[in-house]
Image (cartoon, rainbow, N blue to C red):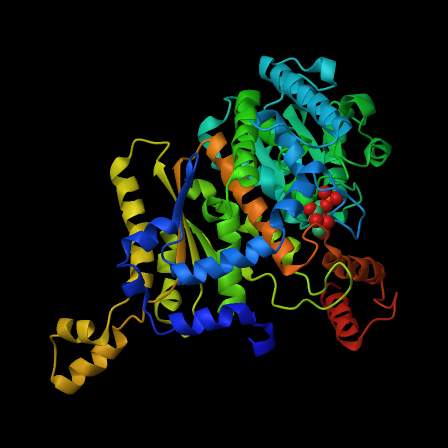
Length: 544
Ligand code: F6P
């Protein structure tokens, strides 16, 4: 990292702590207490971050001087903080019904949200009873296909899988996302069109992938009904902020559930975008998810920075990113049910925080979003953990564990959690050369020293542990809201707009220009750079 990208107020603390190993920091129990905090079902343990009390105080002074409370309150109240799109950012209003604190969001927004929640509840109830004809839905539905991408896919996908133990019997959920026809092809071979309900989710209702896949499934269902348009429409619901476009596409108005400009796609799980989730887990559990998120909203609005989980998480990210120049962070949930958490966080964090200019168009003063990556443990241990323990680059990790499993295979669960704890400990403590040498028994002294060098672990590698009491709708809601507010805080601290995503547009518009060249016979339907033109020609050449 170039020095100017390193935050100067952190440098003195980073330099001081470079001389102190985490092994020694961990001896201080009082320090540990300051770095471990609980809110509801979440325990956040930051004690394996390379921080001491003095550095934490410096971070605290920085956040306090930043005016974070006023910025936070402006978001909750519906100020147009997404300035490049002139929009409010009100995903918190979507779960205000579960809050203990009164919502400062505009009344009309709260009313629309409440009405939509009631519509969702009524639909879910009717489908559960097997007769949703009043909602325009065909009888005998056994499979629900959510078609959407990005925020219209990742949240419901994460939650539907995470909450598998809560699924209502008799209804299976599927997700169709990629424009790669393979996925649609496989799904159509697996499902019965007359028993399938398709939920087309697109905030804009202009997304190429979603509309193409929607058309593919519509044609498939249409074939089953010999083209009877009325029968086909009973297999479609839509969720969109562009109700007119959804209707024009062919979903009857009464079957379109609204989204709003004041909710960003990647923050929209709590809205009708969560419809397929609500169908999968039922209304009671969907409201429990909202309640869990609302608990963290209240915590974020009321706790001082020293105990405020999202604030602390954002400060640790700032510390690693701008103090130490760490370019990535690995997220490793020790829970198969949380398999989709990493991809969810990739969009939430990288689409929100991958910015290089301020809302005023000035270059940012420091590095912004780290690369987020990872996969479930313990599988990850047998893939890339070698590099995390002994590689040349230090990658901060985030371990997520669940105390009480949703099954009774306790021996498996104890093994799982012991691995999580062991990895965090091993990364922090390491193994010295002398310790490795004492263990090396084979060969002469020179051979033992060579072996010991390879069996040395530097340690001093930072990680965070997040423990959920259990993986329930409430704790999942709380966990996601924790990350949402962390993202808000980083946007605030880095001076960037975390709620727009202009960086996705250029590739989309070039794809629109390239498509006719692929569709044409010759491959000469446009003027492209030489590399693109050569590949278009290679594709044409080989598919003859
Ligand atoms: O291309 C990025 C993006 O705009 C995301 O921000 C969004 O979640 C996704 O595409 C899907 O958009 P839509 O819900 O409008 O189809």
